[in-house]
Structures are given as structure tokens and as C-alpha cells.
Length: 252
Image 1 (cartoon, rainbow, N blue to C red):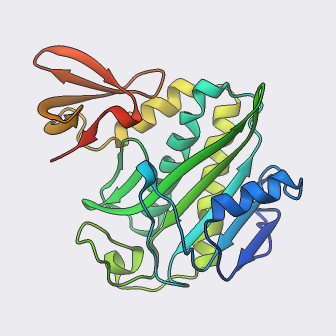
Image 2 (tube, helix red, strand yellow):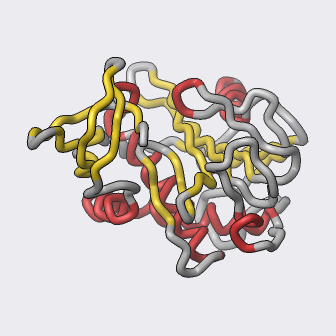
């Protein structure tokens, strides 16, 4: 694994690599509590014994086969209500990385935090924050399937499955960091509307009718996109409705 990245301004200038930990997000938060980490630092692990996903799910990965890492950020320009934008740029960086490696691949973003390639999940994102009177710091946790060949779920895939090739994890991480930093700088420069347009262009199921579940009930709706607050917007029988992350689930 590279010790630092030559082609980034601030991201990945310090990289800590662990053979194993419970969760890179938790470990990074512990370093932050001790003031042992700086803006742009990256923590990677070959294996996570308690890797975390969205909605309390577990992120499973074979040891040493995939990228499991967290990025420490202090986005002072962002309001707490806009943290969802970091989730969006993390996903956009993932799709750009995939299209660099697999030109022409169908890369989509499944709200709120998954990256899909050719209809299968290849990456997940978990953004966690520390907030006191203001936003103290953000830890962006990313799991990216690279060299794993078999998964328990048929809906999962990896770069190796999609191309038949094995990849250097350090090189893939460096490319991801370059893309993530570019989007981060765009966000810092106020290009919010442009980033949201890019997200909508990549959004899975947008304009299609699918089945969703909310409050224990299933219903069909057309996915319109997200609003300025990052909430999912659905057309339900002609009426536009908005849902926060834990208020709705995709069914089919």
C-alpha cells in the first residue's frame, strides 16, 4: 500500500494501514478523539471484524482482497444538514473509478449510499459525523470490492469478477482518492448544483416505476430523484412525496 499520494493536494498524504480492526470508521474516530489524525488522512484495513454498513448492516469482505478504508475530513464549509453531499461525492468518485477501469460499464448510484456496476453492488459508503456545537469532523467509510471472486449474495460483484483481472489495491485506492478530492474541491467551491446534476444522471431507477416499503406497507412509485436536502423524491399515484433515509426501503 502506498504511504502517500503524489497527485492529490491533501487527500492521502498520510495513510495508516492496519492488518485488521473492528471498523475503520470506529478506529479513525478513536484517533480523532486523541487528536492523532488530520484533514485528508486515510486509514485502511485488510480485514474488518465488525465492518459497518447502512441501516446497521454488516459489510463482509475477504481478508486482503478488497479496499476497506476511511477518510477523515473537516469540511468547515458545510452545514450539518448538507453532510449528505459527502455521501454523493463518495459515490460519484466510485462510478468514475469504475469507468476508468471498465470503460462503457453501466455505473449507477442506488440511493442513498451504494455503487452498482452492471446491475450489481460493488461499493458501499457510510458517512459518520461528530457534532458538538458545530460539525467537528466527518469520517467517510468506503468498502470497495476489488479482487474477491465469490460472494454469498448473488447481487454483489467486484472489479475482478467484472474484468477477470486482479488489481493492485494501492493503485485503485490512489485513483479513488484523486477522484474524491476533485469532487470535494468542487463542493468546496460551491458547485453544489452541478454535483447534484451529476448524481441524478447516475441515479439508479430514476424515472422508473418500482416497489418500495415505508411504515410496513409496500407501494409502487416512480423515482424522481432527490431534493436539496438529500431526501428521496417519489411520485406516488401522481403525488410527489419525500422520504428520509430510514423512512423508505427499495423492494424491487
